[in-house]
Image (cartoon, rainbow, N blue to C red; front, side, top):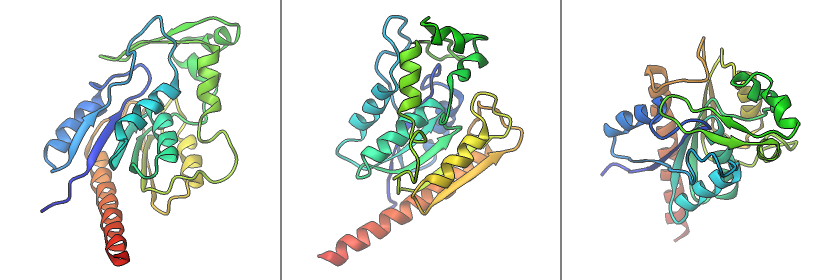
Length: 237
């Protein structure tokens, strides 16, 4: 009997479970024995409730509670997933990250709203635009500052995430520079960290042949870890 993994996908800001990665993963996992689910965060698309990245982290932690999961995430969803993995190592056994939104500044907002970073710093609120089929989000200075302050890259030293981690990032990403992922990969404690830079890739990657190959390799690594863990448990009996 083939081992079955629980896989959870977490999209990024302005996106939805129906983005190109989410729908591509549905097709990918349809041909595997694994259980796949796309996480529905609270308050999607709200123009009245401020977006809070810690709520996304809490949503992930609530979903994975009581079982073992592999988390796949995109952009800002990676911020939440990384923190959840730190908090719940007993539940999150692998991370596959698309263009993780780490080490950002207020200038991030300028990419979709020229002058937006300065506007936020002056106390204005903005509606983060939705990508195709995605959700808008209400942001202000406090919500973005909270995002920056709670990033796993904010503090110095090693990042205590020990599960296998695979990162894919486009070299022409104009929202999150790929150098941020390079820095992240060097600070993770895990002995299994794989970073793939997609030449000429943008922030909006898809589940293409390269990504599928990386997913195949990553899932095989997670399964090896799971098998070794079972062996160690049996040896203690």
